[in-house]
Length: 319
Image (tube, rainbow, N blue to C red; front, side, top):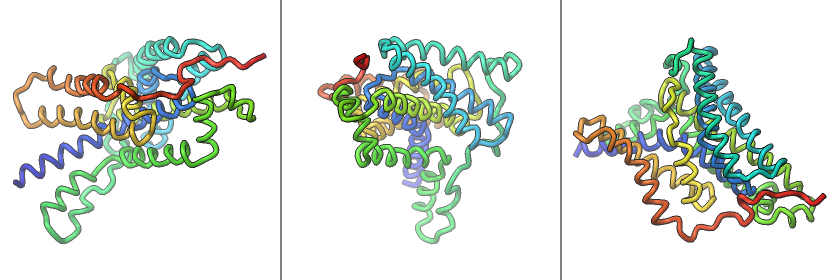
């Protein structure tokens, strides 16, 4: 029984750890697509955020500055997407594909530039990673030691995990409880009608796409500053697309996207846990688990989900 409880705690802990980068990125997708801009370039934005976070984290040694810089790196990529889709009314999917091609290539270039031609950045020292909160916190309390150990394992998480869940509440509040959120959703549904009421659709779309890039960059930076200690070419490898699937599965709502990310994070956590306890399953099969579950979820549950009406439709203001 003791081993079972500890195993469950370990799986939950890994689930939260791997869900956090997906939550950041999925929230970015939610914000962007609620304004009517399809953003399949999340993968490329995550990649740039991850490499910028690792570079700044290694050279400055300050994880918070590195974390923010990772977000800004993702925002820089989002600016390209915004210019293409908003100013030039380019096809959103084509622009997103271009971002996904540019992002990993630029990330590898920056890694080689700052780390003597290596395709992998140098490891960030432990003290330069994002801090772990509530480590050994519950062990201080009296009571059932097994329960306290369970809580200690589950809630001893990097700060980025807690920030991700806080951001879910913030994004939900902005989208559904503020005037700005109403404007964002109106632009995503019918931009021409929104503009007749004095809403600047271009400005709203820019704010949302850049915010999406910043959040995706934070997702990438949380991978290189918390989940692992460096950047490598395969670090992101599909995380952005899983986050995009979470946006769709979650019905373009922050709380739905969060639940989807927890499901996909659980799939990743399960594959990591099974590998760590020595169960003899081919590592390639283990690494397939998150992507297989993503496909199953999309096939089984996405039917009937309705995106914002103007999502993905290039908008050109009447001259």
